[in-house]
Image (tube, one colour):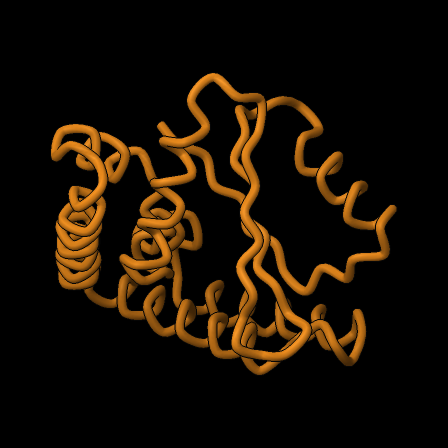
Length: 171
């Protein structure tokens, strides 16, 4: 992900301008858009991209090692309830960014839902978070045009405030 982004940006100067433009745009959009969490993610991404532009090879190696380790941990955890072959196949199907952003425990829950989907049109799981009044909702369904908008519409129709959303497709 980072190396692909660095390839598109091409120069450190462009990276700096893009970072400043992104932060400025988020601040101008509204006072609640640029949360501390988002600011940290943006800054971390900027640092990794800057390193990639300075020494592409070292960053790619580190990222590849993290992905390998995450897949191994995920496969091992998933194999507790699924066959080793199925666990490996499902782990290989997850987006790399999920492997890098989330813990193996969080990703194994996604794998179990993905496996449980089977021929069903959809499966959803609500998980209460540590912060009172907050819940993580995971929806697993085959992809189709307008799917995300439909899910967001259902939440909006029921008065659900969505603080963040993450989309991932499997291969």
